[in-house]
Image 1 (cartoon, rainbow, N blue to C red):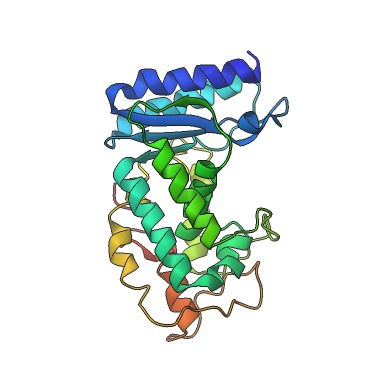
Image 2 (tube, helix red, strand yellow):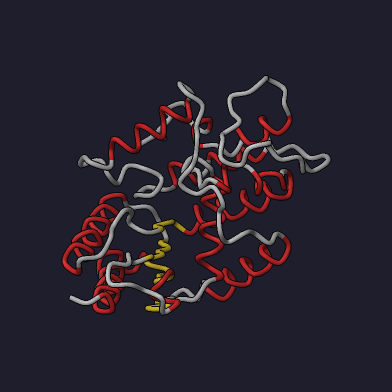
Length: 262
């Protein structure tokens, strides 16, 4: 199976598995840009009407099988979001950057921290604004979503190259380090989908974000960034404005159970 055949097979799998619940799907990344290599992974974006973890898991496993059959790299099952979760995540991201422009210069973004809700929102906005192939949009969602992404990047230009990617340093013994370690351990087990790059993304990017938005309090935007764009500044002295705002968008502080309710 070639990479191009794998893209078509993956797109058809989304239609087959999610059925009438599939509102929109497309492939982005290198295949859409025409810059794919022999082992490039398939960046698949899926929007559904409702969450169905069983079908999401079936799809994730099918996508992994397709990658393996084609000899492609595989490290995540794409973006599988309900429409409600997608809208909540985008609204939170818009709110976050308005309240904390400094997040652009923090490790949350520059070091591509997997715990950062803002970083996740940025990934999704980029998916929506970038080239697409294998588009399936029965609900007609894409034009409005693409316009929203264009408006976002017009207001908040973001560096495309994250200068500290792969060099993230989390505080030793911190909730962030423990949670990141938990997800890393799951990668090699049957629970590999039970992370924020897997299935059930409403657990991390759903209703809890509405409450977290309240912590992004109104007032003067925080523009002073941490001194080191590769090092997570949390936990730090209580009462520090930047720390409080960054913690409001950190997955390590979003749930009573760190890995999210199941």
